[in-house]
Every structure is written in structure tokens, then in C-alpha cells.
Image (cartoon, rainbow, N blue to C red):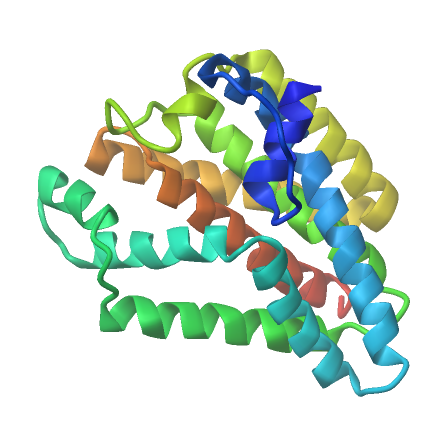
Length: 244
């Protein structure tokens, strides 16, 4: 139960109280996809209510803004910091230092604008009823990628926000998260969704390998970036699948 509460507290703005120890954090990772489903359910409800009164473009904008508010922009912040760090072209130590820099560069501003624009346009591509299972699945897969990155790759620093989650994480955490994601994706999106899940998993793994070689591991901001990019790629892949 502590793991579930930690996952809710960390991934959403829902207030949760509890006396949590650092050793409890790794157990929260198995609940990441479940919290993704909770986030997706709220997004689906927002879309349902908004589409009654406005066009799909307005509903899409509400979804993008709603997800930012619901997650407190946590993963977007990671995406921005990741772009800033990787675009610097500096050595390992300097790159890791940039992850902690509070300043935002022009390249990361442009990148996050492109990311949000892509998500907005792609959400607007899907009419009801297709949009609802997609909104449910999108955050699930985004958070499943994060669990995979935590479980399969070392942490690049001795201390950081992500260390609490990866210190005691094991294969069974990833297995549990993967089984939940497989069932949820298969039930909601069928074969196209499962195909998208596999492709996104392969893409994320390849990127994690390259980043781990460059940095000696991954950091919390990269986990957030993976989640954001994974969501957009699922939307893109599903937009392609429905046209085949």
C-alpha cells in the first residue's frame, strides 16, 4: 500500500500523506502504469465533458493542459532539462551538471513547444470513440517506459531524485509493470496498441543504451523525458495504424 501511495504522490498532484522511508520507493514502480491509467481516466473524462460544448481542437487543448496540471509538469520539466543537457555537447561531468541547472535554454524551449504542439495536433486527429481508449493507454505506456529505464540501466549519479526508486528495484518490478501494461494496452487498443507498445519499448531501450554510454547511466530527468516522448510516439503510431 505504501508503494501505491508513493506513486500517487510522486506522479500526480493528488495530496497523499504518509510516513515513507527511502526503501519504500522502489516498490512504487510497479504501480506506475496503474497511476498512468488513473491519469488517463481523468483525461478521458475531461475530453468527454469538453467535447459536449466545444470542438475537438478545444478538447485537445484541454487534454494537453489538463495533463500538465495533473502531473504538475514533472515529466515536462525532465524533458526540458534533458534537451538542455544533451544539446550542450559537453563532456559527461558538465552534461550531468546541466541537468541540475535551473536555467532554461532556447533549444529546450523550442523542443517542448514542438512536443506539446505535436501532442495537441495528434490528440485532435482521433474522433470518439477511438480517442477514449487511447487517452487511457497513453499515460500507462509512458510510465511503463520509465519503469523499464529504472530497472534496466544504472543511475548516473551517486545521489539524486531517482535513486530512491532504483536502489532496490528488481526484475519483478519491471515484470509486474509490463504485465499490467500488456493487459491494459491489449484490452483497450488491441493488436495495434500492443504493436505500438513493442515499438516504443524498442525505441526507448535503444535511446537508453546510447544515453547510458554517454553519461554512465541515466538520471531522473531522462525518465521524465522518456515518458513524454513515449506518449507522443504512441499517438503518432496509432494515427498511422488507423489509416492503414
